[in-house]
Image 1: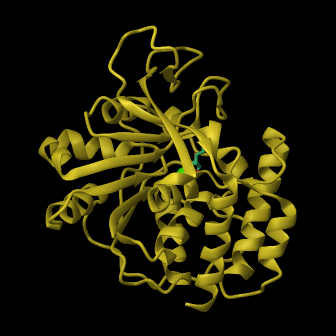
Image 2 (image 1 turned 90 degrees about the vertical axis):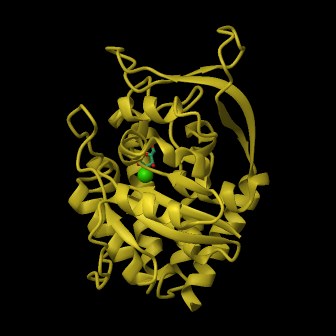
Length: 311
Ligand code: RIB
Ligand code: CA
């Protein structure tokens, strides 16, 4: 049973990542922490509380993290996720009691309580993870792997050079990518293919279950935003692929490559610079996802909604 912690910025696709982890029979979701990204720290935290309320999962510890990047001003994504960060449907008012701890404290506590190293799945800017390593560097040896949604080999979104999670806090990403902890980078090259079409979203909504009835309209909102901005023909469930690749590793194929984070570039801030041909001769520090098994991805996603409708 894989033990995981998700650090996220819900966010429509973060919501799907949480749902996949909560419904999975072969991972134990030890805790969830939130970070500012898709929306402000206050809104992403509230959204996480609402998602856990919808799922009736008061058992999963939840703590709020950083409200801004390490050095830079916060950049949010209201054109993609809306003013609430989860526009498209009304989620239940939260009845989750959050942890009094900061996200970094909760992550450290959960890791230190485990007999075995665990997997960290960041699906937002990496501010909390960088803070954890700065404050408690010894914690790294208790982390088996970081499987993060972020970056891209050739693909980008927030700028022509960068992916949103890395762009928002490039200094934090640099700390994490240079941490020495094994990293799997699940970037846009594979997550933009992990798409639910408008017809598939309609199919989910037509189930009219307690979860599917809300997930449908939310994903349609997200799909419309992606169509308008990026011309993508559906909802790319970026963050869910990071979780699914932990549950079912065969869903992605990876290559060990050197990846560095651009923190100085005027046009290239937040670029994941991936040495595809090994020309730098530098350490291949990251397992980079280069292919995705869409069929299995969708099967797990649809099974998740089906299971949550009846749980
Ligand atoms: O670039 C996509 C990523 O940025 C996803 O994690 C999305 O939720 C946003 O955080
Ligand atoms: Ca996210």
